[in-house]
Image (cartoon, rainbow, N blue to C red):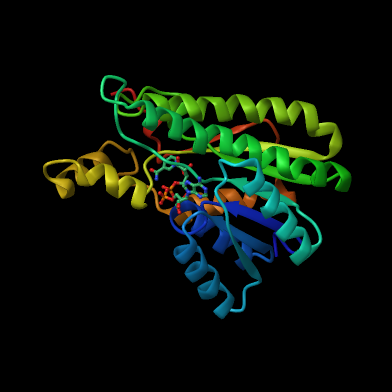
Length: 255
Ligand SMILES: NC(=O)c1ccc[n+]([C@@H]2O[C@H](COP(=O)([O-])OP(=O)(O)OC[C@H]3O[C@@H](n4cnc5c(N)ncnc54)[C@H](O)[C@@H]3O)[C@@H](O)[C@H]2O)c1
């Protein structure tokens, strides 16, 4: 299988895109550590996957803290002895423009989406460098490339991940480490449902949103997971410093 023998850490793995990629990675042979700050949900996710015979552990951690990321690395090494993949995926999206964003919204979005990913990379890099092998995948967004009026701070953090990716790819390519970003459009997860729930008619808003996509549907977490598995596998051995739009054609659209 594509990820046989690999050890992967996936953050934000209790639900949504993180859970889908953790599942797909485990199904394709990886041993996976699911990381999330939602203790109950990540435990349930890990138990569910383990009951299917998949090799997983879970770790309750807040990825905004360097200590949280270091503990994830320590527990992964204790369980599996190496780290081949970090999918830094945990994120938050307060849907507010700058006129209505609070200081706390701004700080929290930057902390989780950008600072958290940076701390995650910093924690795994010494291990990957000593192994002379590793893959880092950052979940960015199409919002890194196109304007979305409802998420300016979120967009800034995702643009930051795109820049982080290129810097890490260039610095650590010679160490055998690849780094890429996933840039999804709207994916049917709790994050998106929370956005739609604010609309007067959420079902109509969802239909209108889907209709803007050339492929006439929103993304599913499994769509993103398939690309994540490919980018983390040896099939992508010559891909680094790249941004992968996966958006049902939305950003190709002008009219
Ligand atoms: N859903 C979309 O439409 C969409 C589109 C583009 C990009 N993304 C990105 O994909 C990633 C996953 O999004 P999702 O839609 O699956 O969201 P989600 O809200 O369903 O899941 C996010 C997970 O991250 C966890 N998390 C949040 N902060 C954390 C922290 N400090 N420490 C540890 N865990 C933390 C949450 O507990 C949750 O389980 C995010 O980075 C998001 O920005 C999502």
